[in-house]
Length: 321
Ligand code: GLV
Image (tube, rainbow, N blue to C red):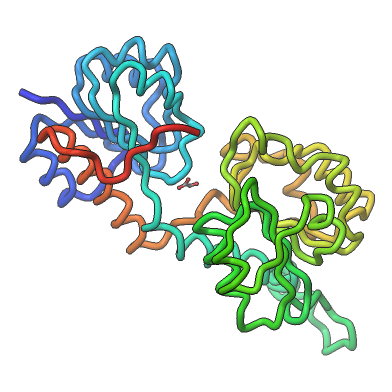
């Protein structure tokens, strides 16, 4: 009998679909990952594996994964997986592109507006009983409309973000490893070198995947080139940012604020300096977290597993970084 491992609790209706294909073992926790040692043991005799971003599929793990034919990653990013090695061992890796694009862009947009208009600070101000009267510059922020917004990473999510800006009369700049003519012609986005994006943007939005090329891209040098009141938003991956440099940039007022949905270490330690900064909004990696989108992501993982176990082509394979 085929064996399928699911490393996080998902609704029964998805498990029932997988049970049509084989024996299913599900880790029953919704918010806690399976301990690594247990994962390495469990993966030893399974044929298919449904994982989340909490599982690292490296050489050690792949040595244990003797029978695995498919690793279905419930995420569009796949920096948690050594895809090359997995593919080399004949294992298909799949991700969940497209189904989460709009939801993730929406979260990025929410974060940008929230930092720009100091929404979290304002809510705390009310909750703490500090609100005494209306004031001319009380909790005054920064306009997104009419501003220059620089998008680093013009993939599906970057484009979706740029689409959302269309009603804001914004000047859209972008930087990407290759140019996207559709973004230029349909979304009025202008391709610029990275340094120009940094220097000219009022808002800098990172939607890029983590690769050797993007790791630590937002470092001391990058923050020093940004406007002193620029707002930096990251919905890509935490390791694209040198967090020490970001903290210094916020402290030295080299930039005006930040909104991060992704962190180098997740979950963030409670004593992390970023959590003490009034002009930083930190979210727990919820870019794709609408119920409908999470349903679609789980279904896509199930469909990919079904395809492979039936000897068909996967729907959304990942082949390289
Ligand atoms: C989430 O970060 C994803 O890659 O889907």
